[in-house]
Image 1 (cartoon, rainbow, N blue to C red):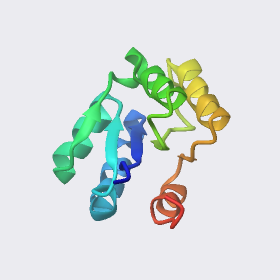
Image 2: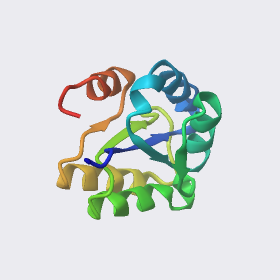
Image 3: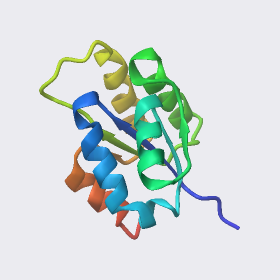
Length: 125
């Protein structure tokens, strides 16, 4: 039996409503995956969809780094990260490191709703 692929769900504060709405719309598709995410984002998605979402720390408190470590351990297959390009983030180096490690390990990382839709509905995942 093949293990389920793991999707990490992350969103900056201004984008949390967007990722929650996206997760609600894609609940059936997401149910086929193991889900994890940074603190508050994981909690919001879990509450809105009734899907189990393993919560790591919040992004600024190390959650982005935890997700990056799981990518390096080959325990995360896809990252959906609704980031806010118009808002300065105090943990910007962690965000860049997460994007870099996803690229190094050739992990799909969707940073917009349009890209997330393409990734989640791809026959390749």
